[in-house]
Image (cartoon, rainbow, N blue to C red):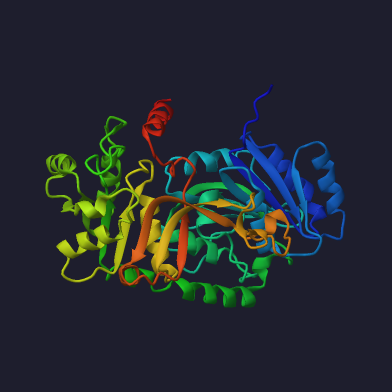
Length: 456
């Protein structure tokens, strides 16, 4: 049986009555030198020849087609396409534009170098309705993640799909936008990269969204107001990191000192925490004397150690009292934020934690957790009248228009300390982790499996 290989990149084409240009856009995807890709075409209730053109390619299994029965607009259509995408990365191509044959290869080779790069954009050729090149447009290299007053074109940017899920995709409240909301949400947590090559052809004509300047700038002003105070707030807050570990003295099955990649499992979490400049202190709370000895030898004065009481180390005991006790031992004044890290997630990197801190501040949340998205499955619980749906089937929405259900994958909790202290956690938001990065080790067999996987 031939092995099915998932695409690395999903290209989605958004179309609304662009039958005149659509076929050229499709062919520019199919002629890409990068072959591990899929093509999704989402048609927003076109009334011209678009459906016939799309069906021609769909029948030959060259694309997946989604036809909106009624017009939903660019933003909602984009969100539907992203949910349908199987690729690790997604890129939008508007139906009146087209790619250079090497566009996907160049963008992919840039984004794959660093996991915290969420978006790669390039220069482009501006063309007219007859494909004449009007100019070479050089997009600005945004130093220090500053968009200034010039947005990156929303189309033809290669974006890490999990990063999009982390910020809940495009905000459908802003139906008229040029990418500002999405980019600013991503900028707070991720890096952008610029490729100084023209990799696509952008058509200028009277129907472009960006030609309606007045409405566009009004929307942009609303979006910018959401993000204007983050840097000022971040510089004034006190953040404490706590890593709870029972240790073998309290739990014989504790794997904290078992080896992963040649060093104790716990060390991977501590090492990532030490890279985060926002942490004022990193505190390990444990009842295990042998573990304390190992930590003091390895880390000396770079971390703080809290010897928790035996009663707080029992299996199935919530670690909240230990966390609060650890903070009270070393802090006379309550911190603003506490970040709790689990040692069982050795592949979780620092940028997820930094994203969580930014997310907490941007959204004024009480708690940020790590999740993975799920809009495929439905979930139920027992009730007095049989089982009751926990998910979004109430209105029988189409699969790709459901609200996204998020599964907690552990790894970290970023909390405002006072609501945590007073059991008043109201608003919870999330950061989406890659499947591999969220791997959790619950026992020695899972540790053995992960060691084997990472050696390959």
